[in-house]
Every structure is written in structure tokens, then in C-alpha cells.
Length: 68
Figure 1 (tube, one colour):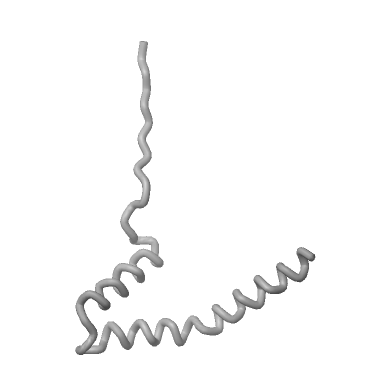
Figure 2: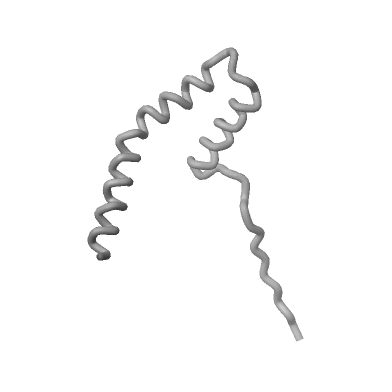
């Protein structure tokens, strides 16, 4: 049963990887389209930055020390 599920995951990953060039081409077309709204372009820009590891922090880490 797990083998069948794992094969399905592999197939999905393979298909997604095959679609990546077209996805990037589509994003590039949006960015370069002079008629695309700033709202759409900014969403694309922020999503690309996030995917590249430059997104806004999602959680705040803090440590507390109690000295006696």
C-alpha cells in the first residue's frame, strides 16, 4: 500500500519538475507584460523572493533568561 502511495508522489513530483520551465516562462511573461497590473507583478516578485529564501520572517524567536 505504501509503495503505491510513494509511486504516486514520485509521479506528481516528476510532473511538477517537468512543468517548471513553463511556469518560470509564464512568470517572466507576467513581469515583462506592460499591461500587467502592479498588484500582479508585485505578487510575482514577492513569491519569487520568498522561494529564493528572501521572504519576510514568519516567526519571531526569543529566549528568556532568569538570573537569580
